[in-house]
Image 1 (spheres, rainbow, N blue to C red):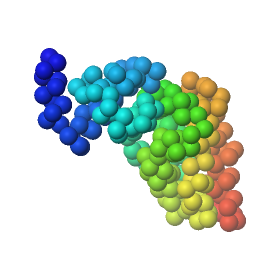
Image 2: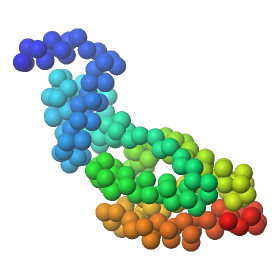
Image 3: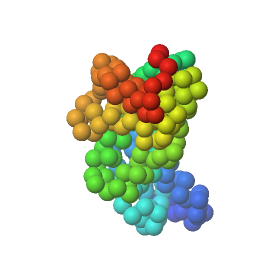
Length: 204
């Protein structure tokens, strides 16, 4: 077995080896969470040595973030016909994700990253543009329907609701956010914000 692993190591280089390491890291992360992820386990599963890992990722957290980014998928924007319906649908989807085993891994990684802004940016980036994309899409439709002010079409404004939801998990440490809190975020914060920028818009 060891000889086979050594032969496999000599064959793989560059992108092929990196792909094998990332695949092994994803499998370890899925099986054991971030707490159970070690460079030794990933190296053994990938059939390589730890030096190959450290040449690409300086520490366990960097590798964990890279593996999580492989697991995360892009969000498709809903189209319910109203801004309120779309925002609630996006929040419900985000709530399910953060409450899931994959969301638990994300929370572990964010806690481990602490105040390291560069690592946090990598985590929250799918990229940041991709994170904002579904929110800008539903908000753009709302602007076209007259439900929101054109001035609201800004990534920071568009993503306010999901940032508030994320805070419920990260700051408050809740396992899942109740539906009434999602409704409160939408009705008390998000809709007044996007409708109020730039003056009155058509009520819905």
